[in-house]
Length: 146
Image 1 (cartoon, rainbow, N blue to C red):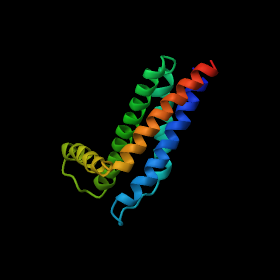
Image 2: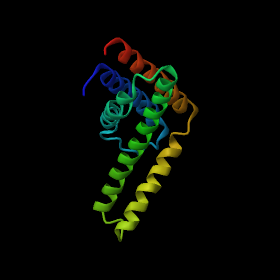
Image 3: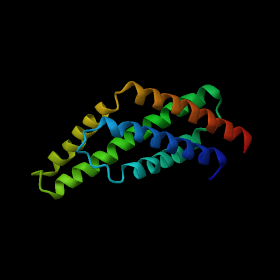
Image 4: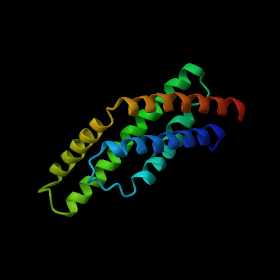
């Protein structure tokens, strides 16, 4: 059921995703082709905000902060998974893997490599602050526009 809390959560987490994407780009090697990176991450953020955070609104301030952390965590996990799958698919089309297990293992390997890039104090602070603010904004929207 669409409501204001889901919309606000989707918008807030999309903004967090865009900001973190802009912070991550300089941390990657210079030869990295980002392609649709700046477009895909806010879409992932909107999906996570709508489905994960929006439906958990209305349980209080402490739960709102927890909801924000959960939303940001899901954003990071889905982002790592989707971008790792795309990287694996590109390599699979170039015949890098001999069987399906190697391809699946490559997804986990890419997720770990990309996850290490996210271990940066500015990125972590942005994710935490964005999660808290998104959770509080979602809770405020739920209380204001029921």
